[in-house]
Image (cartoon, rainbow, N blue to C red; front, side):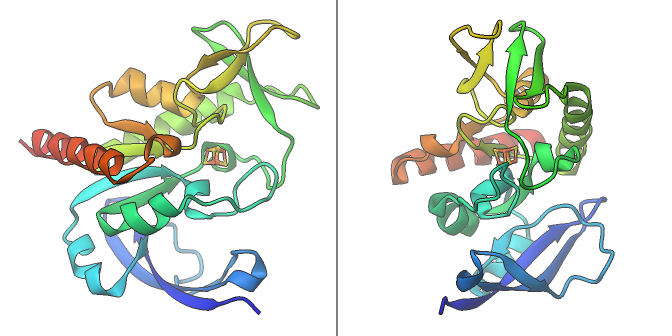
Length: 231
Ligand code: SF4
């Protein structure tokens, strides 16, 4: 039998309002969140796990960090597996309000789904399903641009992105100039929009947060960005 746990979850509403609900998690169910006290039909789009002792600190909102949702264990990956990042889920979550974002499911891709890759020009890559050849570029780019604009308007101080993903990777996504070419390493579509439109925003990959010093450096950059943002 796996361990059952209750988590407090922070939802950010469309207007930036914050709402706490409980979720029940059972590790024997593959890490699924089994139930939520969030009202049915609630439209808040963001979650963050909170420890009771520091809920007050979070609700007074220190830094707000966007996170690739799969790093928090959300079931959004193309292969249907749950692969969370303990440093982000357990450690970063003590210092920041975490805002999970998954561009692929956000744009309507199912779980599980065929993998996608980036093809074509470095300046304008296309995101294509590797089996079907379906081109997702326009839908996912529109979703990313709208979501980033909303998060920035609500107040965003940094982003932790999943390495090597064609959506989230930072200079680590594979781009194939032509079919059969060796891949170049580039930004995924979300990283590209973040770094193009908000070049000062601190952005790292999960694999950059290798130790306490790396995490502390990232937190310092995010706090400095927040101070500058708020004047
Ligand atoms: S890497 Fe990004 S697009 Fe892929 S599952 Fe995680 S959050 Fe979603």
